[in-house]
Length: 134
Image (tube, rainbow, N blue to C red):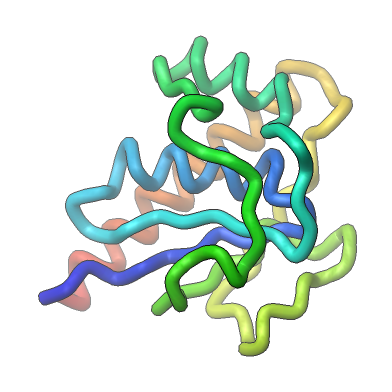
């Protein structure tokens, strides 16, 4: 069976969705393909996210990822909003899930680590649920 395409969406595609894409590729690439996108883009991925993902997982997001628009990724089978506290992006269809994560941009490393840990848990849970459906 073809792997599902999972899109992690937030407004700027520079922090939470990028972390989810990186962790999805790192932890679940055997079950689903991970993409991230936004309704707007930033010139670069959040430097704190880049630094902490390197420290925690040895993943260099700047080497493998960039901020992109929804129109620049394949049509997803599953679309996940990272948290709509900023205002939910419109992607032309309903979201399958909203992870309700606060944007850690500008906050402490411990708050960043907490968001990264929650994303990791949710990626693993998504992987398990998709494996059961297969």
